[in-house]
Length: 295
Image 1 (tube, rainbow, N blue to C red):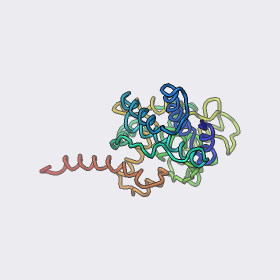
Image 2: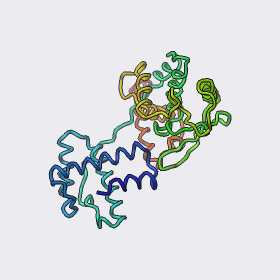
Image 3: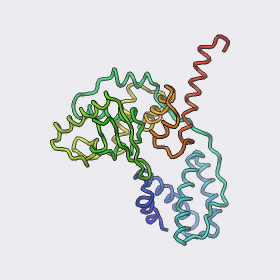
Image 4: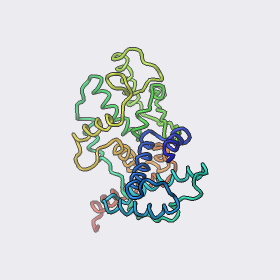
């Protein structure tokens, strides 16, 4: 197997995030564990399309969704492509595989009034942790950035005077997100809070830190977001990505151009952003039924 080399390639050449790297490695190793159980660990590619079909069938029988199956097979396909470029394989066994169809899953989001209540009515503590946790909620919702992008923010990326935030996105791509004057003051206040809490802070230091002045980690951000969203919303997912979905949906509902939302989210193509139009359309249907006298 050449999985370690493949992961190094994704990290250094493709510059994938640590979470994407972990997902790729987990999916690929899961397949090879399956091979070990049914094929005595032999790494033979001659009849591998048959083994791939067995693996896919097994996952479906285990109740794994078609969407997850496609993701796992896609990771394996990228691995095969790497092996072909290295001259280890001549062709991908996946070329003879057809995947199950998966329905489109609409992104979940928090209603505007729920987030308004959280940010306007719920009291956060005024110590460093309380100020930080509130700002994490705000910056995820106000900018639509990903959790991984929030973690990699450093002090020099946040320009409260210029009212912009530089975000390091997927594949090493950078984008600039504008913020309002009031939120810029909030960002400046948090920086001052850090200085009073920790003393001198460097431009290269993480913008968000733990109480021990360490970079935040994914599980902590999830717990912060989930705990606070739970105070106002119990009808669905309560994750950092839900706030990203909420940002895009609310922007679209208030008339933002889809291309502008695409750029703010850091999507490579418009098709990835268009999923939010479904939520907007559902809102239009609801308004129509409520407002039209013959609806």
